[in-house]
Image 1 (tube, rainbow, N blue to C red):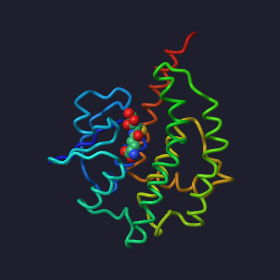
Image 2 (image 1 turned 180 degrees about the vertical axis):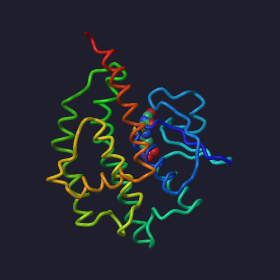
Image 3 (image 1 turned 180 degrees about the horizontal axis):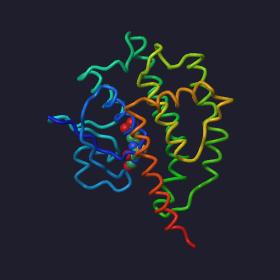
Image 4 (image 1 turned 45 degrees about the horizontal axis):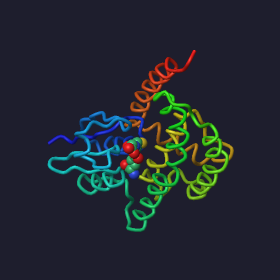
Amino acid sequence: MALTLYGAILSPFVRKVRILLAEIGQEYELVTVNPFGQPDWYYKINPLGRVPAIQDGDLTLADSAVIAQYLHESRGSSLYGTTPEQAARIRWLEKYADYEVAPFATFTVFYNRIVRPLKGETTDEQLVKTALSEKLPPLFDYLEAQLGDDDYLVGDQLSMADIAVACQLINFGHGGETLDPQRWPGLAGLLDRVSARPGIADRLTEERELLAKIAAHAAQKQPS
Ligand SMILES: N[C@@H](CCC(=O)N[C@@H](CS)C(=O)NCC(=O)O)C(=O)O
C-alpha cells in the first residue's frame, strides 16, 4: 500500500522526511496539511496537530525523527551510519538540529519573516535580531566544529544528521538570511552539498515557487 505523508512543503521537518523518501526511492502521496490551520480530521493522525505525520498501511506516526527511524528500519537506508556509535552520533546531531537550531532558524527567523506576514501579523524583528546575533552563532559554531574538514557530519557519507541540519539552514535561507561562508565554511559547503542532491534540488525549486507566491500574497495584506 502506498505511503502517505501529511504536511506542508516549507516545514523543515516535512522536508527531512521527503529527502529521506527520495534517498531511499520510496514513492508516496503528499497530502498538504497547513500547520497553522489543521483540519479536524488531522488530529486523529497526529493528536498534537503538528506536521509531518505519515500513514503506512494501518500505522500512523508523527514526528520527523520517529518517522525517519521507522522508515530506515522498515525500508533500509544508509542514513544512520554503519555502527551503533555512528547511529548514536547521527541521532544526537539530528536532535540538535530539530530541538536546538529549529527554535531560532525556523521558529524565529523563518516564522517572523515568512509565516507572520502571510497571516497578516506584524513581525518581531527584535526577536530575529537576537536569534541572528546571539542564539544561532554558538549553535553554528558547534556544528562547524563537529564537521571539521569533513564533507559530512558522521562517517564520511550523507546521513540524517546532515539532512536535519541542512533542513534548518534551508528555512534560515527562506527567511532571507545567508550563512556567513567565512565564519562557517564547512556548514555552508554542507548546505550546498545536500541541496544539490537529485532528490532535493527539485523540491527546493518547488519550495521557492511557493515562497514567491507567499511573498506576493503577503504584500497584498500589507497596509498601503
Ligand atoms: N519535533 C517535530 C516538530 C514538528 C513541528 O513543530 N512542526 C511545525 C511546522 S514546521 C508544526 O506543525 N507547527 C504547528 C503546531 O505546533 O501546531 C518533528 O520533528 O516533526
